[in-house]
Image 1 (cartoon, rainbow, N blue to C red):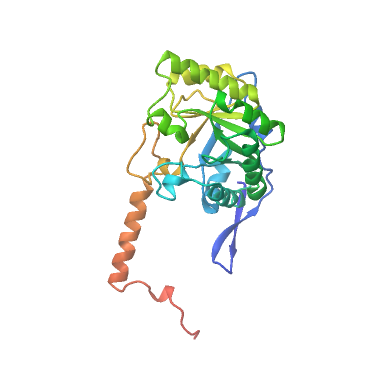
Image 2 (tube, rainbow, N blue to C red):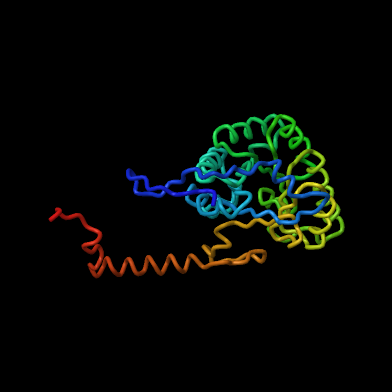
Length: 290
C-alpha cells in the first residue's frame, strides 16, 4: 500500500499520510516497455478528487486528471468548456491524495493549440501549481512540434491520438477511427510522429483493434489503450464509467460495479429513516455525560 490514513480530528475525515514508498516516475513508466514489449501492462484510471486518488493510488501506475471531468463532475455536454483553472484545481487535489502513481493532467481545449509557446505557458502553470509529473495533449502530427518544444524544456508529455474528444466537432462524432485505409495510415503516422517528437507515452482511443496492435508493435513508447486492444502496453478507463455511475455504458467499458444503484439505495433508506424519525438515534446525538 502506498498510503495510510489518519483521522484529522478537526474535520473528522481520513487524510493520507506518506508511507515508505517512492512515487513512480515518468522514466519508470517509459522503461516498462523494453525492446518493443511490456511484460506487465500499465494500469491507468482517471481521478478528479483527493479521496478518489487515495482509493485508486495503491492499485494504479498512472492517475489521469482527465478533462472528462467536464461530463462526470460538471454535467457539461463535452470537454470543450473545460478551463485551465478547473484542470489545475482538480490536478492539485489528486496529487495531494496520492503517493505512488504518476499523476498526469490533461491540457484543456484552447490552452495549447495556438503555438508551442502558448502550450509551454499553460503546461508550466499546470506542473507548478499542481505538482503533477506530466501533461497530456491531444493530436498527432499537428502537435509534434509542440510536444518536442515541451519535452526539450523539461515538461513530460503524454500524447493522445485516434478518437480525440476535443476534436469531436471536426471528427463528426465519437465513432471508432481507423476504419478506412486512409484514416488507418493517418493514425499510424500520428503515432510515429508523437513518438519521434519525444512523447513518453501515448493514449490510443477508439480505434480498430488491428490498428491498435500495429501501432503498439511499431513504436518504442508505451501505448495506453481505451477502446483499442488488450495487447496495448496498458489500459485506461474513466473511473465513473467502470464503477457504473452512469446509465450509458460505452462499448469499450467493462462495468466492474454498479455504484449508482448502491448509492441510490442508500439514499432511499436514509430518506425513509428521516421521514420516519428513526434517524438520528441516540448513537448520533450529543448528550451530557452521566
